[in-house]
Length: 223
Image 1 (spheres, helix red, strand yellow):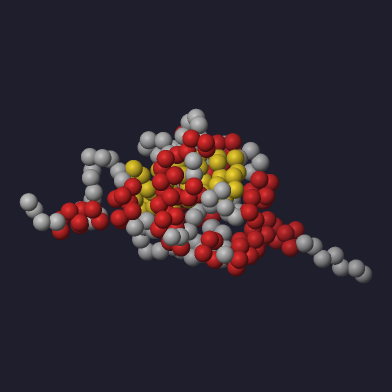
Image 2 (image 1 turned 135 degrees about the vertical axis):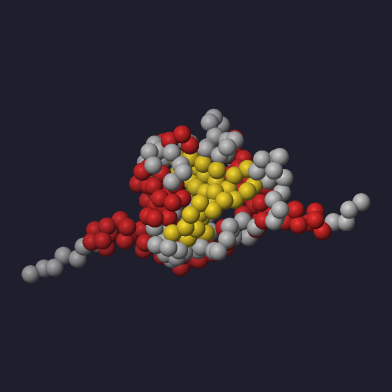
């Protein structure tokens, strides 16, 4: 009797193959990938829960295995309304196979060109799967500057983090004229994660009382 050994992806499905691909990417470059496993379904639902077809088009940064991408489709968005920016070459072919109608580009998210990416209608939302805490501040500044140059007025940037607070420093938020609001967390993710919504600050708001700019102004002597 001959025993047939099935390929791992056949026995355990695409989710197991995704986890293995993600783990190998983490081993190769832990600072770029920053997690040993893809984001879970709970986090995917949380980071996309405020996004609907009215937000289209939507820009996704660092889609990886496409967990957030699928959640966006589950929210009712059309594949053709999604633009995915992925730096890791190992993720590009599987993404294109899984989401053939989406626009998938291998590029550095810190070097986005708004006019070339969106010459027409601009995105109403950006979903980020990038590990901002492990990136240099200059790169984080480039990512946020480029993303908000793409976003239309009233648009939002959604970012998750494994840390205890917003992954964007207060001084950087002030410099870019942004504000952050925590929209929820999930303990079921590995590791547990929190999601923040970043939006443009109304010019009339100025810097918040706890912001870097406000503290600096309070410390300056009155003249």
